[in-house]
Amino acid sequence: MSKRLLFAESDSTLAEIYSRYYSNHGYEVDTAQDVMECLEKLHKTDVLILELGLPRFGEYGADDVLSHIRTHSQISDIPVVLVTSENSREWLSRLAVPPVVECLQKPFRLAALLDVVRVASRSQFYPACSRVGFSAATVG
Image (cartoon, rainbow, N blue to C red; front, side, top):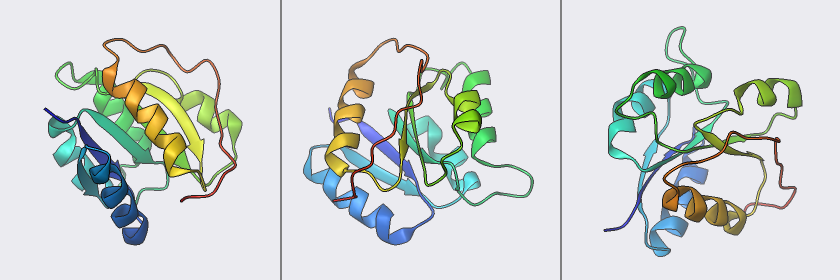
């Protein structure tokens, strides 16, 4: 059975690129373009790739998605990869605790994210992010 990825990404062009690339690598891919859609689809995913700039739903933002995962035992083991165009290490360090397994700065290489997803989708347990990792390569 293939692993299910949820890309919570506001840019529809990037979401389509992610969907095609990871589908071609054997993953089932779903996308969400805002926080509410992401929350609705969480229960059907094995790995969440969460854009920190995901459009808010009312007062709820991407950090609330992480809080929701942490506080609901049915989904608390879903590994999360944060992606952002921001370079605020202090803010990212605050968010980079389980279930977050990696933080990537846009633009990044699709193959680099694929490596992270492969490890995250196989892990029963994952460590807290001890660092905020960034890739300086471009999407592609």
